[in-house]
Image (cartoon, rainbow, N blue to C red; front, side, top):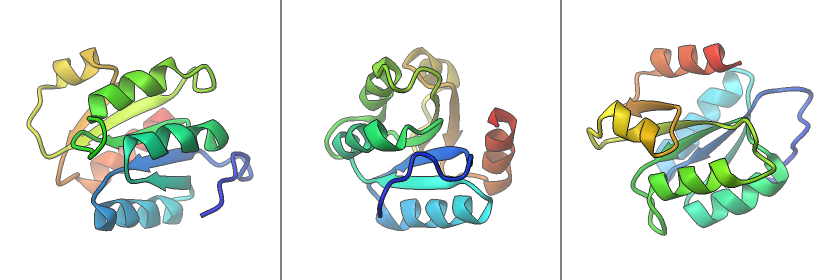
Length: 126
């Protein structure tokens, strides 16, 4: 999928999840809600895609194959081209919210994600 960082002023959301069915479902839902979306299935690809796409919000799975979501969160927060990125952890792990925030996440949602809760959070971040 080509990346376009200037999709008519739409909020740019990156979905990072190694489970392709989950990432595809989230991508479709967010596109239907009016977001510009890119999907990465590992941390390395997410960092590379962020250079061009410049997401404003990233939904990160914690259990990724090449690095965990906490390491990816720290790396994205350190990128100079992403000064105000909001990071949302999406995880099946029952990691406490305070720990997630301490590791660079702004918000933490447990899978399976409540769609209404996710959309409300995204709207509040807009």
